[in-house]
Length: 304
Image 1 (tube, rainbow, N blue to C red):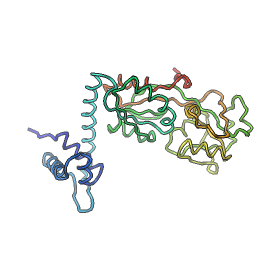
Image 2 (cartoon, one colour):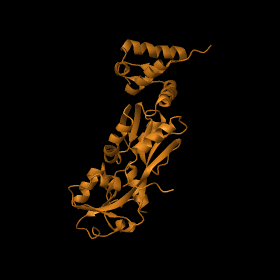
Image 3 (tube, helix red, strand yellow):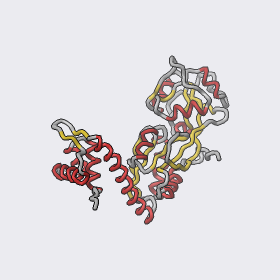
Image 4 (spheres, helix red, strand yellow):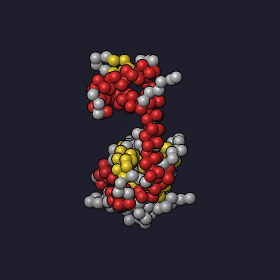
């Protein structure tokens, strides 16, 4: 008969991997250090192999330990999802839910929709994690997140999505700029300008360039802002122009500036969407969440 590890042992093992310190792992697990150490030793005895090299200065996982860790995280994620599926079957959108959100959406959408979400689902305990898309997708894959609010298109395997609508781009220029009083501008108009964008890693940069049929800015013009707030300040100081989504503009991002937002011909846009792991039984619950998070009519319905 094969002896199997317990979820508690795997949880302690994952905590040790997260902290690389027995004391901190014990504190994170709400157990004593001796209890956590014994749990790891029991896991090694069950598997009949060393998983951790213990030294006075640091904790180093053996090659087998790293492989076991990956399996342990997957098993823990499956066990958590099993419990959450049972909870969702009793009452959807109750209890804890871990939602990832990209930073070009979070401060502009959530203040508008969270009050409505709390009214509709008062027993939902929402934990928000703001990060760039690539890291959110990775956290979805390893079970650290239940779902994520991102912008499409984004190439990722094994995810399903529900659209929240399309978020159109506008060209943002100083009010004294020659294009400021235009009813619309052609995408090519940005090519003649110093185009300021977010730094690499923010999908909004790629979406803005792709939507307007533009290539990356010339090296001498390149500037990578860390946030849309910084980007707006740069444009307001006359250092160039930028492309911003309606979601941020309608939330008041340009308030207090001397900037104008001009519509772009063809209404180029990005698609806001809630994504989750493909095949999860919680998909109906996440569709309910997407409907509750959908912004108002200022965001266009997604094109079919």
